Image (cartoon, rainbow, N blue to C red; front, side, top):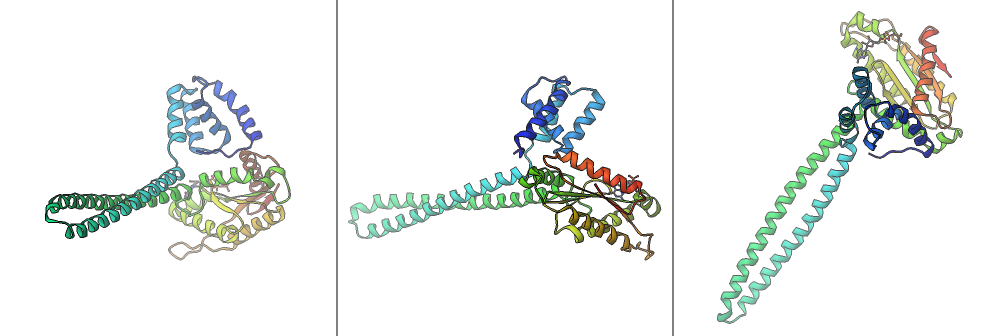
Amino acid sequence: MRYVVSVDKSAELLRLAIPLMSRQATALHPVSYAVWYEYVALSNPGLRKAVDESLSEHGRLDEAKTYAIHRRHIAEVDPATAEQIADGFERVLTGVSHSATAAGTQAERYAQALGSLQAGLAHAAEEPVAEILRHTAKMAQAMADLQSRLKESQREILDLRSEVHRARHESLVDALTGLANRRAFDQQLATCLLAPNAASGAAGQPCLIMADIDHFKRVNDSYGHAFGDKVLKAVAQVLSSVAADAGTVARIGGEEFAILLPATPMARAEQLAERIRFTVASSCIRRSTGEEIDSVTVSLGVVAAQPQQLPNELLARADTALYVSKQGGRNRVTAA
Ligand SMILES: Nc1nc2c(ncn2[C@@H]2O[C@H](COP(=O)(O)OP(=O)(O)OP(=O)(O)O)[C@@H](O)[C@H]2O)c(=O)[nH]1
């Protein structure tokens, strides 16, 4: 795992992690710090959930639990690393295979040269040369066998690589809507906030739009969960068509979406949010019976990142703006 974090932010995370870490029934060692670092950085939702669950169940994390969480959520090879490993293996195998081919070709040439030499030799020398030829033929055969085994291994590695590639893709995509999932969004948000223009607060800072479907529970309750899923897909489609060119569109919760807009003026972000609101409200979604349902609407919150802002702070500000839209009657955009 590679951490992309500025010195200032890492100091802030250290300051946040130490009190939490020292409250546990675990010695203060690097494994424990890694767990609490990931916890306060909000970059590893699975780990955070596991820690919270463990704390609510046992009150404190002991050594065994700390190590188990570290193993499960930090130490396991992530798909990107696995892909790099597969690439590395493939490169090594390709190199060995080329060497084996070259050695095999060389052995064949050697055998041919010996063959022509044998023809020109006196009878007395024929037997030893034939012996050498037999050995050379065996060597050439062994090279050919090695080559075919290497080719087979190469094919297996290619299969493995596409499997890892697929797993990596799936680990970052929301299966229902095809949008980026929470994990992908968290990664992009962390990276985006470390970009030089975001860190300095220069013009063109990242903006975040958060959108939530209004009264979605009613949709599920009135028309069923499957239709609710259809609505989620339809809203996701609108978000993609309006904003995919401008930034990352993600489903970050059940009926909650986020759009991360790197280096975007606030006015433009507000414009996009308004277009999303309008497009969703004017879309017509039909049930399989053909019946048109009451229009689905979304409430949105829009914020621009402040200099040195942490991901959770930006998310909390967007969430507050979204809450203002809900409180104000829904189907509206609040910029804060
Ligand atoms: N169909 C479907 N429903 C989901 C999914 N994830 C979450 N939900 C539902 O989303 C609903 C969210 O409801 P609430 O958080 O109460 O909010 P709401 O009804 O949208 O109301 P407001 O947000 O206050 O406008 C719950 O009924 C969840 O069951 C999903 O993947 N598919």
